[in-house]
Image (cartoon, rainbow, N blue to C red):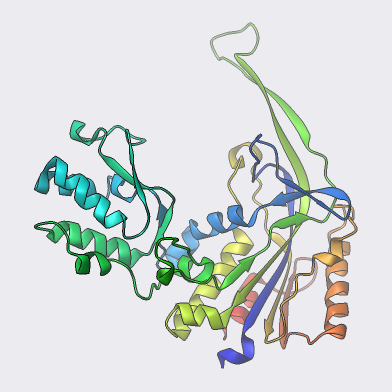
Length: 356
């Protein structure tokens, strides 16, 4: 059944008010040149981060991993503290390094971001040189080893820490790469494009002052931040064949994962400057497609920038390019629309994509 619906594609149009949800190194909204003009852009990394850390996946009972350099600095897990109390200063450092070295090169940091609960921690924190996406099972394996460890861990014990078949949804969807252990890499089942504005944008400055309640003679602080307003086109594609492979053939889990991913893509936005601009934006149009046809991004619809003052025109442009591609190439087997100015609901989209 899955082979008849290998690719699920999602095309969304969403209008953002003045906002800055995804900033560059200067604090300005990210941009890109498309069709010879400047567009606003929300990076795929920012989108995926917002989706995987949202409550949607958790409330549906789906496991997610933890992407971090600082697993042994997590006070909730208390891994280093346990080793320190049970095995002493020197061995705690040695065993921590041995465990983390299974995933990546390690390095000392002089002090944790938060003040250590015990002064013996100072200068002893071990982190990986780059963030590692640990599966929830790998974290459980590490915790179990630390709890039960009586002496230096053996090679076999360390090898058993790595998850042979992770079932975490974020790993299955977005994949992971561990340079030191390529045999534990996972191919992403979900591709996410950078959201790009359909309209040309100019970054606008927002001059602000902060008033001191006890000082009646002028402001206590002055500053400037930038924003844009835009209608974005967002495209993503899920390879259900790869997803099933990543989830050991569990059809039910894959279907639930797809619905959670699509729902989060529809209702969760990056939270940058959310308190300043309240950009709680939901798509006014969603097109979902599934089938074996070669996936295609429909951004060509907006190669020539259009004004962001006519949502229905944007829908018309997207539908027009879709129809042209469907005439020239093999088209997807089925599609479902949600149109705020017409018919359809998000729930109907979720039911459509979740049926493999």
